[in-house]
Length: 457
Image 1 (spheres, rainbow, N blue to C red):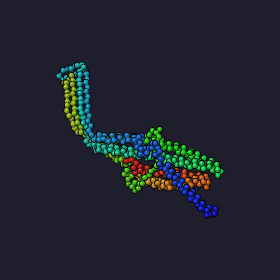
Image 2: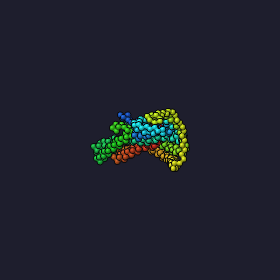
Image 3: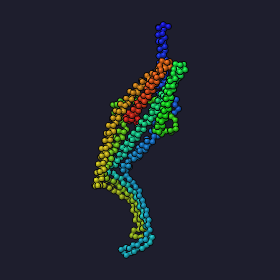
Image 4: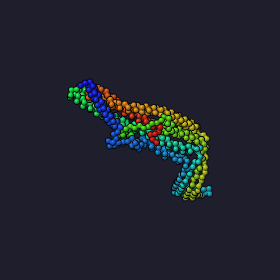
């Protein structure tokens, strides 16, 4: 065979080998991406993220407890609790007595009787209505309304915190599933290497050392698979705790981690200061402290009340000058009270209320400053994680091709097991980084949305 024929034969083999490698790389890569992203159709009971959110907001104990506080403040937000409505009371009494009576009159007449009976019947309806108390009623009514609105923000904050924890746990399960599937993909490669090592050992072209090494590698991967399964089950238990689901109920989650949030920092800085629920909570807190000061200062002003009574009374006596005394009718009037001195107690209350206003303002300013810093950090982390995710998505293609080429070369005897192990290590590392990059990008997205008040509405 001349040199040209040898070269042509070699080129033909290389082209065939290259086409085979490219074909198998494409198949394995598509299979790997399919494994990482879509396995939903095979599941009997898939808990979607939206369904998990619905269950959590309906069942979570922390959310329910905070809802009770909101309902309590809603019940308190009434005009009557601010003393703006009149008070109407109906009173009645009846007494009867049996007495031994001894009476002496100026006329010289004397009465001495035993078991003298007397009856006293009283009934009245009283009305009291404060019409002015230094604007205390109005300030109290506004304060009750602000307390209710603040409790709404408190509930939203609790819901946000719970949902952030839920999303983290949900995608932890997705992360563990992807890592588990990647491990099982590596097991498939390892099983193929064992078959190659067995064939080589049987035809004399391989070594027992390579065969034993492939068996050890497979056992290590199966051990990693068991650990990954345990981590997956633990994550599911934590998710069940948040959603208050039955721990014995089997479920699966969606496989994909979709990140479609593309915020602009300038827009975030504008919207977050309008929609951030923690900031709105402290804005309400500051307003409540101002109204509390107004309520206390109102005690320095006069208090004017209207009052009226409808009276019925009847007295029966068996002895005495008046044997029957009966009265019916109305009485009404107005009462004014002006506080003059109360031992400086009011002055102390006003000073402390002013300190509370100052304190609440400082807390509000601090929250604004922290929100600004948190926005910058969260936005930077989000962009950083998205850049890493893009790099890792590119890198997994290379790692997959390296492993498949190394596997094929080992099969045809043009490379050793060490080359395959190095390629496998590269692939394992790339898979782990890709899965973690997706997870971290999703978590940083969730943090940004919470800061912007987007998790709930």
